[in-house]
Length: 238
Image 1 (cartoon, one colour):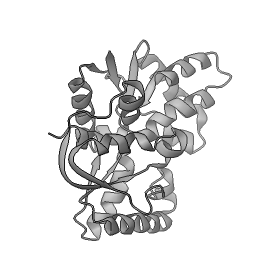
Image 2 (cartoon, one colour):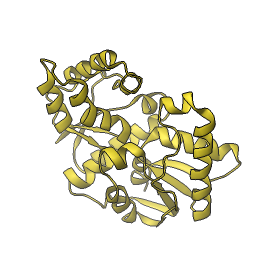
Image 3 (tube, one colour):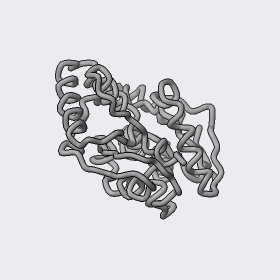
């Protein structure tokens, strides 16, 4: 199939290697990858701040941009949740509401797409070391993803997967939350990072770049050498 990559702001501006890794994995499975350059922010910051009128403009633009795409795949559970769960909500009652529902039905988080849509868990990856997985809030609670990334990581040759005590606990980023409540956000990052440290893992993996930036920022300032990697980066490794 032809897969249309949905690249969120954090990936575009701060972690472009994540988007490239996702494209590498999907191509490696024999599918075509396209990038529609007209795409912009999904509108989640405006939505979370209560400015639904602004978020609706972003939703309409995304609907137009991804019109006709066979599958829209994004390496960010948070932004995918915005399209799949909250576009229908913000567009409710609008003349184009059905188009929002249609886009939502064709949009997938990266790991979810591999496991649920393609039926793939082993992509031929190899990574020597020990990893622990962080469940981002949107992926876990909005998209219902838990076993999918773990099944993909379990199939990576050379990789040992260990569970952290706080694997399902919020990292403290939460978009605008970390800006409005920096002290609480930092305390939450501390709890998360201490749990990661206790696993003895070399890397912490997640499906949300924003969570990885939060966790990685705290770890680096504590002098902790644990690396943060997106799921796509590990699966693209050979």
